Length: 357
Image (cartoon, rainbow, N blue to C red; front, side, top):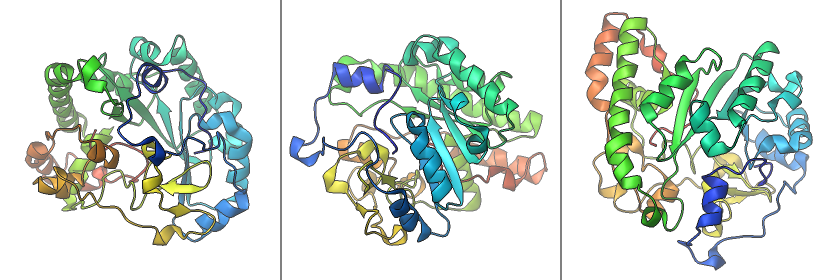
């Protein structure tokens, strides 16, 4: 986390924080005094990362491109296998192509088409992102470009994911999304989330899975719709997940602006879940977190989902549903008939994409 500051005031992060914050935790359990930007030495970060020969470093915020000087210095001084970034994309044109083109993956916050993106993120945001995507493509960025959606009640998930994948101006290679639900104390008291999830989101997921499967059969291509891709990958390769699918707290960790290590960015400032500090910790010896609380431990899909989300497990606001598993026989048939390959379901894991949204 380069900074906690952001140059947007979206309806979810900023808007919900203004409207509501009924704490689920005691105020004494949260550190509200964290610095707004990193306060540790770059060499300390390099020493920490050097202990992991497969270190992947992802820049996160707030908006990390507000701190381009820090970002450039880290990329110059810290040795990592890959660099990635999660950004709203508004400042991408200001970062030199020398650095942009070193990113293995760029995750761009975009919620779908122009109307939905501007509704949630602010006027003209969509247009600015499009222009900057054209800039980095023109400057020869060839890494993975992932659309990182935030999904709320205005979102038609089937329509918006298709838009992001099929629009030639965008040229996203992948899509994932995060549901903005259950992160705030009175979410369900003031929102129609339950009705929307039953009447729009779940039916939309079913249609989207069918679109994904049909595209495989007609185009001989496995679209990188990450929630589906990750589950299919595990089922096809016989992989079980007793840990969180996102990697949080066992292979993915977040470094706060003060150098403290937490399982994921959502748990910013939650002192109970501090796992060490980069100044005196080894990344390969950090505590690994299992989901040990009900209802997850009593669920027969725990080995597949790994517990869904640590934060959500603590707050206990989720239910379970699955639609990819029943399509595995169709996928296996297409692999056997050589329309697609098993290797088409391989991907760089733990890159910040949601698998169980």
